[in-house]
Figure 1 (cartoon, rainbow, N blue to C red):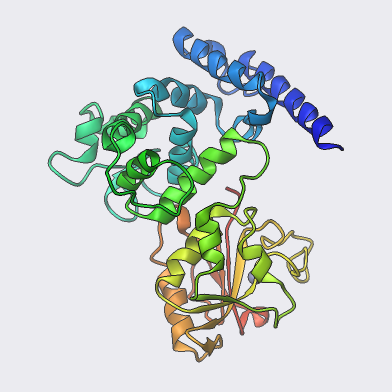
Figure 2: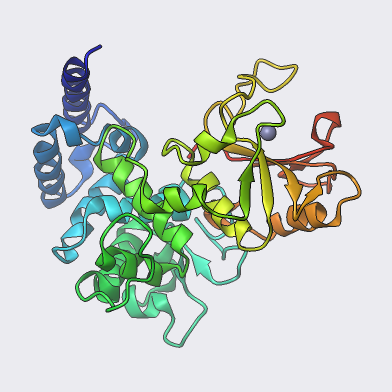
Length: 353
Ligand SMILES: [Zn+2]
């Protein structure tokens, strides 16, 4: 397909999806007629604007964001002119997969860190006043309901720098504006988090993969991440490829702050399937990394640095918690596993985003 034909087809698919969404057929579980008229109009307005510009049709967003959430993001984005529904949706995606994550604290209770709750993961245990007291509606149970949590997140972002960014950009290497960086950094103090949220927001805005941003380029030049082709893969090129999963990029940036890693495989050169099965490997989908040296020591049953790294991964909660950790140590609980294929490297993989 030529690019222009492809663009037209993508635009047509986008228009069909919009039509299906607006008539409620796209998601029988949440017909749009049940959404308030004002919200329905807001969505129509936003989506019509996109449908008329096929190059920015947010087809991935329409496929991924539940329509009830989409309606709430679109409406809440009106809180201040600098806020977009894609930015809100980026936070909702990273924090709870739009309320679908099975993690503790999303639908009830509190998260594993003991602070936060609901689809937007508001801190209900700091303060007083807690973050939820400040931006929510003072009803503790409402933190779990997207119709209260999403507008509260919008108020927080608008108050936290979207309208008046700090003079010093907290994450200058991340794509996006200093105002977006300030506001998202205030939501969770980590530039990998800002990178991840803005990366998802960009994916919801444009159809082709976003170009490599400075964060991705910095990753490829990080002296603590050394790719090797010794094991038959070519991770050097993959490391600067924007298709590499945002969680893999972010995790590598975090790990490189603690250890020196030799990366033996990302995507290129890995077998399509998990060995001995017909299951597509997460490497094939750009969602996994293999590490064969930690702090200069080859990974093996007797390498303490590699063992420390594997154990440290268990403390990760939220968006960076891996779905698969293969290593010489089984550790006895998910996401860990061990077998004869994982005696000389650490495999870290993620599920669907
Ligand atoms: Zn692997």
